[in-house]
Amino acid sequence: MKSPTWKQRIQRSLHLSRSKPESKYFQVASIGIEGQPKARTMVFRGFSELQTQFVAVTDIRSEKYDEFTKNKQAEVCWYFAKTREQYRLSCSVNLHTSGSLVKYYWNCLSSSAKNSFSLPHPKVPIELNPCDSLQEEVKSTESSDTLLEQFISPNFVVIEFVPFCCDYLNLKSKPQLRTIELLNDENQWHATTVNA
Amino acid sequence: MKSPTWKQRIQRSLHLSRSKPESKYFQVASIGIEGQPKARTMVFRGFSELQTQFVAVTDIRSEKYDEFTKNKQAEVCWYFAKTREQYRLSCSVNLHTSGSLVKYYWNCLSSSAKNSFSLPHPKVPIELNPCDSLQEEVKSTESSDTLLEQFISPNFVVIEFVPFCCDYLNLKSKPQLRTIELLNDENQWHATTVNA
Image (cartoon, rainbow over all chains, first blue to last red; front, side):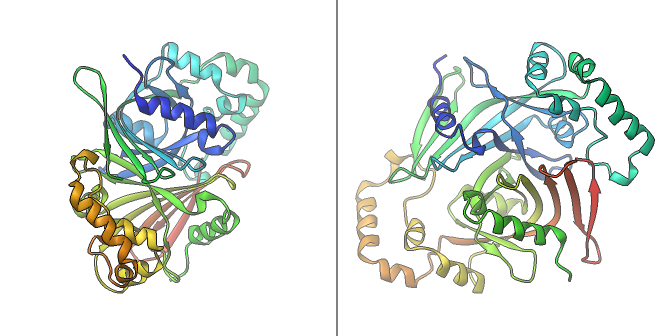
């Protein structure tokens, strides 16, 4: 399958913005458990080399894991301030809790990122943390960094975004350029230039 | 009503990042016409001075106008790269097409922003633009800038975001600080510090 124009463009944007924070993360919209819109920043962990999929990671105890378990739709909004380009990627989402992708991306994490998966449960009020076990937990992670890094945390999840549409906007070009690129039934990407 | 902690914090973030692009815009999640998640970047047009509402503007012919007409929920995700702070603001949305807010924010727009409301219909394929009328339109906007600016475009819409929850995350503090601040039934904001 031919690489879509948006992927070629996004790789250029990533290169031009490689020293900028916006090359490191994007915003993701999902559907909340009660059907409400949700938006959060997630760290970009990389593209599939030959395909259009890309990856973020999360904690199985996080709200976004529950949301994506219930509704596997996402829209990723990636804005590059330096080049004034926006990519809106409509995606379906695959969650991976085991397998080669999980192993690969776990090994890409820093030690502190690995340790974050054994911290107390996200979004629980701090005063509800069991003090003794927390201290124990912290102590044990301090004394067993090497051990921890060998074993993939059971809380670690790889989120694979599989795009089927890209709405690309370039605010620098005159007039502004907007292209909608869609994956059709024959698995081919087809682009239409539209009014911004 | 006492100003919530998140508003005091966001004003500080805006000040510290005033020279950075991230002080100019945020990302907004909405529910698409078919129930799908949507995410887009929108330009921040300002806070209500005494309250917690804030404003963006759009074109009545845009998809987001249709989406917010159907479903008045939004979540705004505002990430400040410099200070490594994220605000996730769950909001209800009010759409204004006339009245004092519309007049006020129309007058805040630059000439080129004002002109954008008389450009061809957003998201229509460029080859479908009626060539003659487009040329006419462009000509007419060129020759009537002053006239245009006096009259508010009927396509101009003010989107007012009314927050009822802020999920604040500070990635710089050690350990990371996360606070959930909720507007309760007595119209008071109440904050809880939770695990990040």
